[in-house]
Length: 364
Image (cartoon, rainbow, N blue to C red; front, top):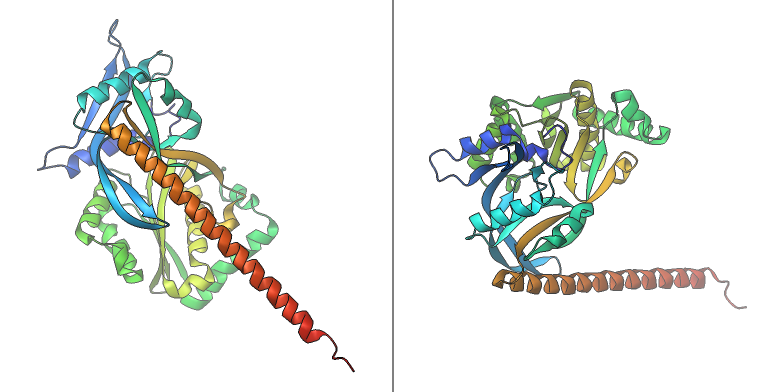
């Protein structure tokens, strides 16, 4: 079922990830369960639904600043799109209703990357409403060609030259380049050392982060890179993997090399290593917008943080209030940006007018 699944996050539905969760929960009350869905008539398996209980935050913001957060108890459907036999009519509705009943202490069912083009399916579940926290947002993905040469050919000759030049300037400034692939637990310490050296605030709880990354590595799910020039680490690409997708979560860089586009060079080099050594179909960069230099290779897909909840409940009222407030805040941000653009245009026009006045010949 995983081999034919079309959801964006099959990594989190894999046996390896479920085993990772089990390892992480040792000695504690388990926060995850795996449901196997069977057909009543013949007991054939028609679905697998891994879930875990978490807390979601509803941030009430003024502009980009969070004023306060309301915590919501959630049953998270791992993988966002339930792993079900799509030929079975009404199966998704049945699963949603069963989860809402079993996790009655949770206020919502949470899917962190649900595709917008499948959103209509959520509107027909009896007694259930869907709330998209912060609206549908672009995620950028990169379909991978077969081999490094095919990847480079997707860029114009000018972009290929610029990318090569950026790498060359980086090596001239910092030293000979080395790509260190991070896949094993014993490599995690060096990767975190580099990250903390770039910015200590990036790792607020070093022990917890090290345990998490080492756990992913033990189960074959970690695929990250440290880019080293000479004896100095200049960038870290944090990533994880499923059978068909490489997920890039973030890129950390040495601040003093930002003017040499070290982040762009890091992901460019990492992609080439991935193409040379793995057989992924796609790279998933998550929410955001792609760097201008890579738009020719990326495909934007709209996804959202979907919260499913009982249509008539206090949770429904809370989410309605949050949605109204969030739309008002977005409108405020748009108006502020429009005012900034208008002021910038006025200043530019004033400078042009002053320049013309200064250049005009004096009257005799």
